[in-house]
Image 1 (cartoon, rainbow, N blue to C red):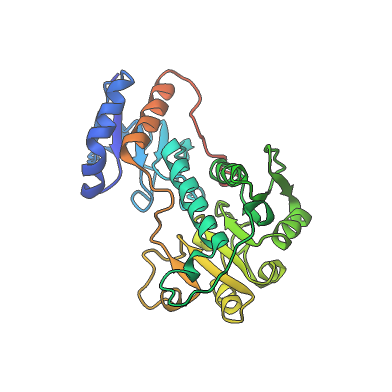
Image 2 (cartoon, rainbow, N blue to C red; image 1 turned 90 degrees about the vertical axis):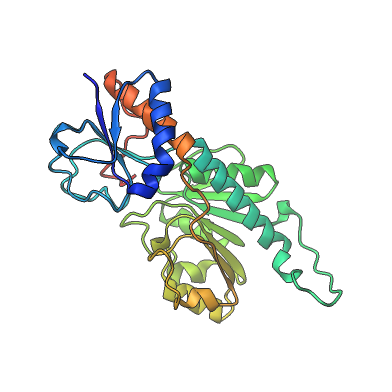
Length: 308
C-alpha cells in the first residue's frame, strides 16, 4: 500500500520542502503520496510536522508516526491527543550550524572582539590563551556534546553538565545538583544547550547567575525559557554579567519593545544558530518512513516522559 504523507506546514514551507522531500523519498525507494492538504486525516500514515500547525492529533487514527522537522519538541510532547510515536529532527547540518555559531561567539567573547570594533584609540587588550579560558556547556545531548568537543579541540578548558551522567573525551563531565553548582562556578563563558523541560525552565535564575564568576558571558542558542529574563537583565545592569548573546526567546519574533534590543550588553540574533535545512532534513524524514514501513524502530524517537 502506498503511504500517505501529510506535510503540516503552510504554502511557504511547502514551497521549500516539496522537491527535497519528494526526491528524498524517491531515493529511499518509497512511492508515497505527499501533500500539504489533508482532506481525510484518517487516511494519513505519516505526518511531517512543523510546530504551530496541527494541535489535535485525534483524527489521525491510522498515522504510524509524527516526524518533526525541529530538534526541539517541547511544544508537542505534553499534548494529550498525541498518541502516535514522535521522532525529533537530528541532522548533521543542524549540528554543524550549531557548532559554528557556538564556537564563533565563544571566540568572539574570548578574544574581546567587540572592544575593537569601532575603536578610535590604540589600546592593547591581550586575551588569555584558550587553554586558560574556562567554558561550560549546559546540556550534553547531540548538539551540546558536539559543541563541547569542538571547543575542547580549540584547547578551551571545557566542562559540560547534563541531568544524566555522561562521559566525553576531553570534557569534564558533571551531573546532578552539586555538579551544576560546580559547572556554574567555573563558567567564564556559559553556553546553554539544554532542552526545555519543567526541570530546565529558568535554570538561569538569580541563584544560578550569582554562582557565575563576575564578568561571565552567557550564550543561549538553546531555548528562551531556560533564562529568567528579569534576573538576566538585572545581572547585566549591575555588572555581574559581562554580556549575553541570545538566539532564542520566550516570544519569537522578539517584540520590538523588548529591553534586549536596546541593552548595550546584549546581542540578539534571530534564531539562526541551528536552522533546519530542507535538503538534509528531508533525507532524515525519508529514512524514518522507510524504517517504519519495514517495521524497524524509528530513529530519534522521543522519550515522552523525559521530554526529549
